[in-house]
Length: 487
Image: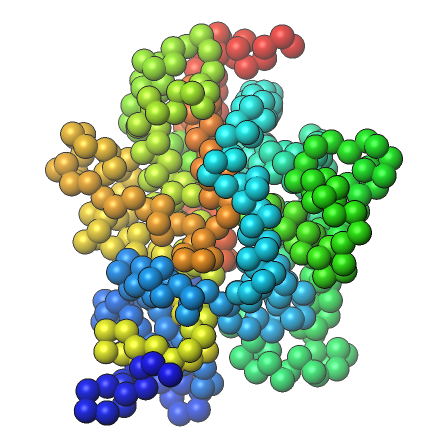
């Protein structure tokens, strides 16, 4: 096993970290909320790689791009697995889902299937759909701007469910969208580190349900999970039998293998359902963050609209064909929103990896089965990489632009925003496309203004802006008429 000894056959030390207590280690020092802030403070004291423990379990926190790249990218086979998630994985049932399944045949097969519709050479086929859905989004915003957060959720669901299941989302209280939102919320709750004691002591899963309130919650969450995994798939299967199915990813899976084994069909269900988890919730957060960022930075909004007017004009909507000619729009996306969200990352901490065998890095031991976490928030707010890290400065990615950075270009944060190594998000290209067309169309047609002075983000694994108010008005009468089209 690599890394058990160092020079002179002396035991290789663990990475530095805060001193813990006997038996429980650092369990009382691990916060239940906004862990990334604590991890960032520890990095200032202990460096780019920090070790803590909780009841004998090692946790290694990576706080630098080099450490993340060296371990998750260059040694990807050793760090592609997930740790055991007793509550969300075993009790709720997400253990076989694409994000949490162990690295192996099912994980590779699911990602291979998803790449058929989400791969970088495939996503352009969805551009027309995204443009159409965004035009509907503009009309919704024009009619009821105060409901913009609802409209954001609906447009993202419309794109993803059309691709995954050929399903058309209705305007109000769509059952599929509501089910997916409930599943997202419950998953984010279930996976919070330290929330459930059974994640620290897995043996607690065997406590009778009447003595364990967490098992009753897991049972409720599991019902939601199974509904989202099974019901849309069954819907498409029935439509195929009746000859009414629209083209979709799920339909293609069912039609290619009419008699799959139980195991193979489960893989198909997770892969088709995985399209939603591959970017929907994060895209909702990202677009909401865009509205928040631009409404509070009118100077940035003005520069973006000047670029749009110069390149696109004011007599048509932007399209994907304009993308390469809109560098400032792309810089806004890079600075403000997932998937390239640096200002307030949608995923402040990447989902944890597991070291499958003992390793040594920079003279420190990483024990076998250690949980290894990339502190994406800390990296994206490191002032040595991103000067003025709390400021919203799209110019940091553009050469020859006047900014507080004196022309210093910052690293592209995409490499820290989609997960890492063999666990990188399979929906990153679709999410990027969706965000671009939303930002470009919205700024071309609307002015945004802040209606509040204070803003907060949730502390869950997918960080959302707390509900906020935003003033949204058409840029002109002509813009309003263009949005309405032939109506």
